[in-house]
Length: 189
Image (cartoon, rainbow, N blue to C red; front, top):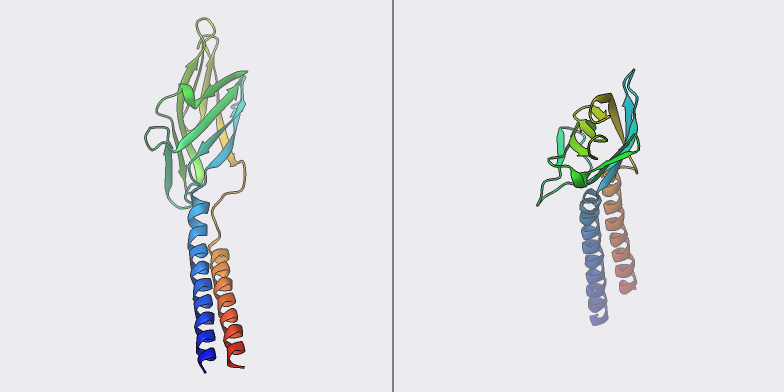
């Protein structure tokens, strides 16, 4: 009789430990997936009659929400833009030389990049300004090329699917229950 009680307690402790571990894993996975940064590639397309188009990229602290407005900025101490570059006409503009840069998504779609920077010296100064489109000034800012930009994630979005997380948690808890029944049944025999 004593052997049965001792064995049942051990199997109960094991099952409780497995259930606790399953709960911790289930709760920890979504927070770690949401916390990762995401990089977007930019394509800058010139309007009809514009001479220059280009490419770029930016990295933000987390994926934008699918419903509502997500705003990212370069302001310290809680900067949410970690990198940003534009390449146009052989010129590279970056976050390092800009101030007050802002990136905004509405319902998960990029709607605004507020960015301004001048590089070079007279007579070869270039400037890039963006807000819902871009204006690239060249020829010592006497000529301009205008266009729009589009962004696409460089890798799949790190937002977890809630159904998969629930399925994982249910499977882990079911496994704990199966182990409990298996060890409990052996101790009775």
